[in-house]
Length: 164
Image (cartoon, rainbow, N blue to C red; front, top):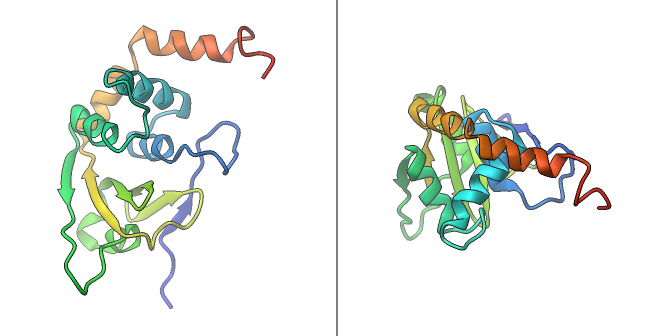
């Protein structure tokens, strides 16, 4: 039996695991960013297309916008798709970061492990993006925009949502 390469990861400040925020969690790990920052940034990006941040059309657009490199997985009849687990085990990937789209889910593979709130490592990958340092740098530049802090601060402050 092989040892799992899964590492529990949940940057959601509530620590809830029944939240459909896999895209945000994956972005947080891939870009070394805070959950609230990535919610705001990816939501603002998605709004340009009148979509939500976890839309299958928005995820690739966002990743390509920041400079990630797409890898397509070709399904071959009779063979299984690669998984987050198999991608994490490849020796040449041990120092790399990938955001992977699997069946109805998104997960990050980073430095030889895959990070999630549950062990999603056996789900087949449909496509994945390699996250170079330049993409991480671009995300951090975008996060410096004062609008990100303003929106995040408004939500966190006692105000319009304090009765929730």
